[in-house]
Image 1 (cartoon, protein in one colour):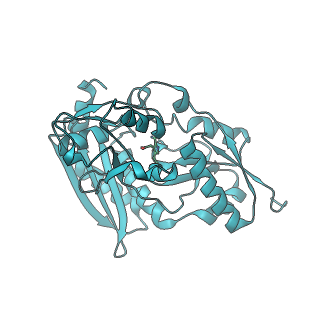
Image 2 (tube, rainbow, N blue to C red):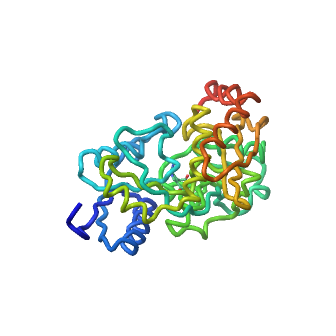
Image 3 (cartoon, helix red, strand yellow):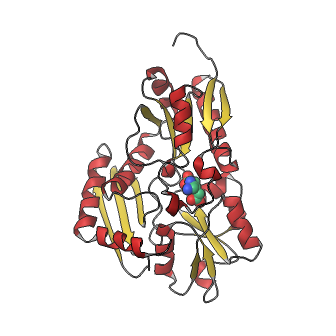
Length: 309
Ligand SMILES: NCc1[nH]cc(CCC(=O)O)c1CC(=O)O
């Protein structure tokens, strides 16, 4: 493109969390490239449907409307929470950048730590991954399915409808609600969702100029980690609503990946780790997924189908 420094149109969801994270990306990009960035709010299916995510399928409901705007040329690029991206390839769309990842962990919001909640306490989450791992930590608690944005979920605790809720730490930070956090779960206790805490910048694959420009905010280490995590999910053919937790990070120049599959009752889990070269994160993810399957991961995940969601 010959015209220098024309403003870029950034497509984003309109929630406080989305607008905040998109604003941070816009600032970083402006600083590094000199381009102004205009935010364009887009409503996605996930923002209007009242159904539980596990029911509407999860995959792509927060993403597809933004991709449509990219393909029609209404926006130049889109910022997504990476964990909301389906694992499959998207026709005509390029993953142009994964910025430095935020804290990937899950957090309990409520009056006290999980261990100190009363017997039978009501804890809200819509994610089978969190349900299963919560039950593994405290089999007596009552897990209550909820959805809605983080603010709505936190209000249910304030109103006394729930004793606590589990949310992503990174999201709580972005909306300024870290004061509500009573406990941050170590990945040993609760493995995060693949890609949690990371963002994704997408643009049209045929816009080489944009692919190059957006690379200014790419962080190769974060991209490698989330690639390994998402490969596990892809090989297991599981979506964001599967009881699959992962965490990858570079440790002493190697990429270390841990993944688990937990039965929905929390009673059984398969948990494995492996290390590999940071330049081949997909190889590492595939290897670990295959070992999970060898140990019966598909059977554990299959049991989910018999559960009311
Ligand atoms: N599916 C909703 C969603 N997508 C990304 C985040 C949190 C922020 C992140 O992981 O980057 C959340 C909310 C939550 O899980 O608490």
